[in-house]
Length: 479
Image (cartoon, rainbow, N blue to C red; front, side, top):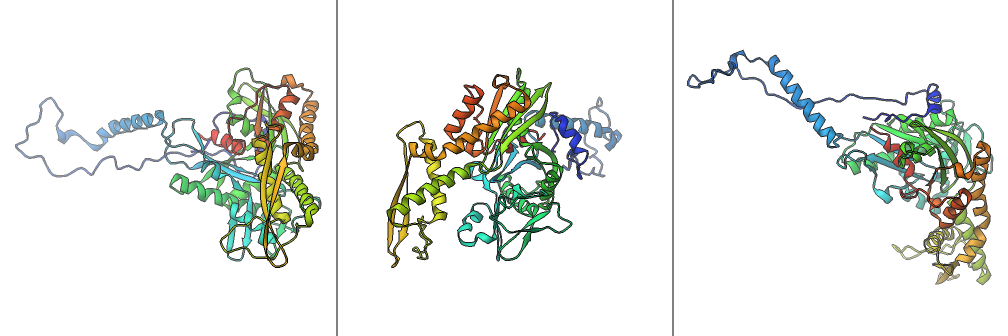
C-alpha cells in the first residue's frame, strides 16, 4: 500500500489537479488463507460422550463461528501491524536523477519507520543508457561504452525531458531531432545507429533497471507503484513527462515530491519543534540547486529556489583533466589518441583525454578525503605508447594548493545561489533553522565550509549519504 502519510504540500495540491494521472492511490488488503476446512458430513461415533454444558455440535453452524474467526483474524493482523509487519513491499521511492538514480524501500522486517536504500552504495546507478545492436544496457556498463561507442550512449536525459526549448550549448554532445506528436518531450535524441529516442524512453530504461534490481533485493517482482521526486523548477509538462517515463516502465506514480521537500522529509525536519525555515543545498554531478522551505503546523512548502544549471561535480573533474593535459603536453606531447591494443583482459588507464577525465574524478575524490592536510597530494598513473606500441607509465599528481587554485572560480559560483535565494525571499542567514546537504558534490569539505560560512552555521545535516537522501525521503512517505 502506498499513500501519503499526512504531510501535504499546499502548493502541490493545486498543481496536482491539472495532471493527467492521479498521484494518490490506495489499495485494500486481501486475505487468501484457507481459514477453515470443509465441514465433514459424517456423524460422531455413538460412544462419544459430550459435556452436557456445551452446545450440541449438531446445533453449531458455519455462520455462527464466522464472527469468532473474523475477530481472531483482526487480532492477528493488528498484532502483525503493531510488530512492524507490512506484508510484501509493492511501492518504492525513486530518485530519477540527472547523473545518478536510486531506489529506496521500507524494510519488511526492520520495524516501523525503517528505510533501506536498495543495494546500498552499489545501488547508486549512473543515469546512462547505451543503445547497442544487441540490446539496451544501463548504468556502469553503459558508461563504459562512452569510450568505444559514444554516439549510442545517452546521459543527462533529465535535462531535456519535457522542455520546449533547448539552447545549442546544452546539446552539443548529442544530436537532437523533433519528437513525434505523441511524445511529451518536444525533442528526442538521434543515436549513431539512427534510432530516435525520447528522454522519457531513456528514463524508462533506467526505471526498469532499478525495478529489476529492487526485485532481486526484495525477492519478488510485485513492485507496482512509486513515490518519485522532481526538481522544484520543473513545470507541469516536465512533471508529466517524468511520470510518463515511469508509466512506460510499468509503474504507476502515486505521488510526486519536489526534491528539496524529499530531502527535508528524509531527516524528519518537517516535524521537528522550532523549525520554520529549511535550506536545502543540492550539489550534484551536473547542477546546483539551493531551495528554502517553510514549515508550519506539519505542512511544508518550497518558498523559492536558485541555482546554476551548468555547475556540478563533472566541472571539477574537467578542470583537473585540463590541468593534467597541460602537464603531460609539457613533458613531450604524450596526450594523444592511441590505437595500440592492451593485453587482453588487462585494464589499462591510458594518457588520453577520455581516461584523464576519469583520473580527474579520482584525484578530486582523493584530495577531498585528505583535504584537512594542507600538504595533501593525490596521485595516479596512466600509460602511453610510442610509435612501436611500447608502453610507458606516467606518474600524475595533484596537490591541495593546485586543486584550490584551479577550482577557485567554481567554488565562488557555488556560493552565489545562497545569496540569491535569501535576497529574493528577503531572509537573513539567521532565519534559516536547518541546512540539508544533498548530492555527491556536497561531500567536498570546501563546499561544506562555504555553506557554513555563508549561512553562519556550525552544523549541517549530513548524516544520510547525500547521494541517496532524496530517494530516502521518497520512501519515508510510503505507508
